[in-house]
Image (tube, rainbow, N blue to C red):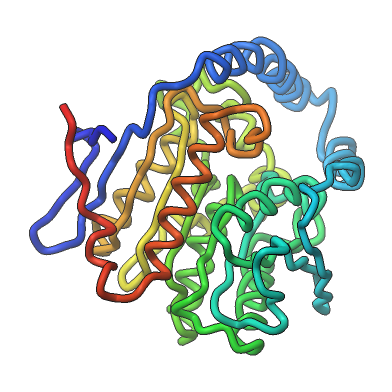
Length: 353
């Protein structure tokens, strides 16, 4: 792997923030990126324009987004995947594990708690079941996929409360905090950092690590507006990310900076892995998260995937790059869960010029 020295922020007093460029994008990924940019990106840009000109608004859009997950019920995981629903008072979750792994009701050795993406207003268990099943199988760890409350049913502060309740459930079930990996994509990637800070602030035992794929962690799109990736992102513009904040996060038109994970204090948080595409506008969020990690002395591996679109890991059935990315996640998870004797080697990265 090639280390990117211009992004690597290393202080002699703190663990390193290491930026890596894991691989050159495959031809399939490059073609996919172009197709998405000329189709989905244009359609979403048109939707943003329609919202700005009052053609559509939250009264029209939100009922559509909240139904997306129901339409994706036919997406089934690979054969051999085991599923079990868990009901909470305000939300639900689902255990997902491979048949080669012990039932999490019996073996409390380790677990992944997963927060799906969807801009805090779409997606859920159905949309992400196939992805999380692959992650659970590749990591060899059972995974709790959390279907937290979203806009318009809940504000993001209440969503974080749901994440904490799901984490408490794992602790109450007997899973040691030091054997729990917090993971998520997009909005769920931001929530993963919010949960880690919440466990610290609420005097709960900290999880072992955080894994965030294309994390949406800044609910204020101002910085993204001027990021060089804004015109070239294959899927969503900075204006697109501003819509959920406008529709269900802002109160009286105002965003409290404290709601955005990038504005929190990362002191005392566990090691983290971030995946982001080189052309994503959310590279801006990943860069801010890396800065917070550096300030807080949090070991971070930031992997920037060449020409990868937003949460490209979800296309692992088709893209070799996505399969490689999930293997990288699994390698990180296995090393974190290994004995303390091997843990210092996680952050040693050789530069290959």
